[in-house]
Image (tube, rainbow, N blue to C red; front, side):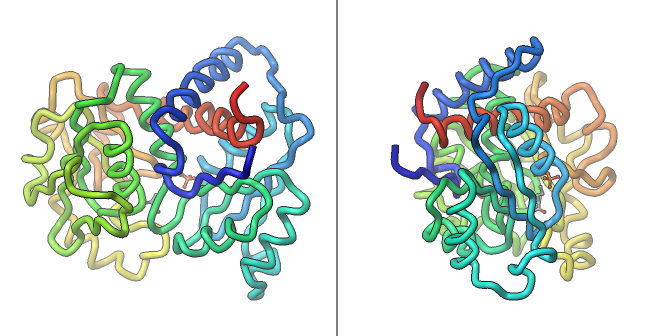
Length: 304
Ligand code: CP
Ligand code: NVA
């Protein structure tokens, strides 16, 4: 099998996701039954973090360990990357030593340059533009809770950031609709989002309108990592883009609430919503583990 990378959600086809999700179910069931499954016992994953992380780090590290493999975690500041070694050289070197690489970095161009010089599969653990591992877990969670996502409506309330862009790619792949509501000046940039058209999303000035009849309401922090200098301005601009109980009421009765986490209660979401009965954020976070294990298995071993 030739080297496959996972740099954007659309790097896998809908049919490949069907396979990865089927494997996720199987891997999750075995894990819940305390049955060991160690197909990657001779493999090593290297992770490079240029930004903070809790979920991504723990889910990949625990996941690789559970699959029988080893993990090396590199933080930029402790490595030669932090002293200016070109990313291409780092890629050439570490991919002669490990079997799989996960990177969390700033511009998407950085991970693309790494992948272009990599001998092994590269996984995007978040860039300024995309967060494919997150949305893979979110789609799996939606299907687990509510069945097929095709034809459903997802309301995105807030910033048109990496997580939003990836939801838009998901809508094209899985054939559902996204109602996006961002404050003025923070609208979706389709080219940056990597979407082919506007058929699968609609923009709303009023977040309550976007929430109407949605099957799922989701949001994210007002200020993503790397944009901290804009924090004060964003706090003002995003004030009305808070998911609260009234907004949940505008959606379908059985609508779910998701958030990639970490969350800021009282900013993009109220405590009542994120800690309330419609919120599935903890299952969503847990499914990062199971879906990423299936992804690593697929990238390294192909179809079994
Ligand atoms: N959702 C997510 O990727 O969380 P971390 O930043 O903690 O990895
Ligand atoms: N949009 C957020 C997601 C964190 C998981 C960020 O990039 O900081």
